[in-house]
Length: 350
Image 1 (spheres, one colour):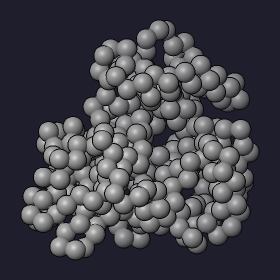
Image 2: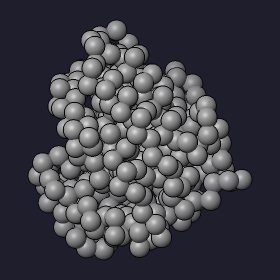
Image 3: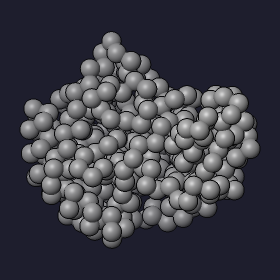
Image 4: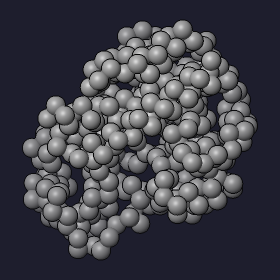
């Protein structure tokens, strides 16, 4: 994560298990390792992110601990060791944080976690007024083009026979029929987490099953590529974050998510950065092709369902006593708006 989010060096957030974490770092980095700062960077829907500064023999190491939370949203869709493996396997032409090690023992930090080096720069909160201003300015310039160029490079990763090939065999069916696999997965999510009948979501699932487009490409997919998941430097994008939803499948899903209404709430700009037409023009320039409108429409509705499933799972996990995180309940208040967006998308598609 971004080094400029660190507060004063002496700060040690009490919510972080400093003592057990310090012992772990001494085992990994040497008996002289000492935690000199530890702050909570974020408490997301799935994992916690801690900024941890460790001093070893007079050298300060700025690290990030990404801790998996069992009660987070859509836990069946993510796995911390898998996330670690993906980051370790992303080729060097795509900038990601350097991962150092994975720890499965939940006793150390209250859950499995992995450690990575901190990347300097800025992670922008896209729904803040300041963040929207920054992203609109960045999108109009070279950073906007780089944002789309990086996505094209992700989709160009040669995964067959490489370290990311394991992603292709994780789900039943073929990655060349990604639409069928993802609709089935979302039907399972709706059935598992609904706390009341969900007619709008069932209608959307039925629409998806009957309107699946031909898949034009099969590539590595980031799964959550948006402006809030990159680290911006002064004149370049320094890293792409949050690969836990990566898979092998239809790259149109990444573009549809980037362009979708949940990533431009109250704005005409995709990811609050640029117009839809510019996104597609830049993607075609750097990727050499562009998905059909039929594919983009299909995947926008699928991603709306996925987003809705995130909030549904958080609410259900809280109600079932699997988590006491009030953040998940707060997010559940967006569910009526999410259903409305799904219905609007279905009406537009009809």
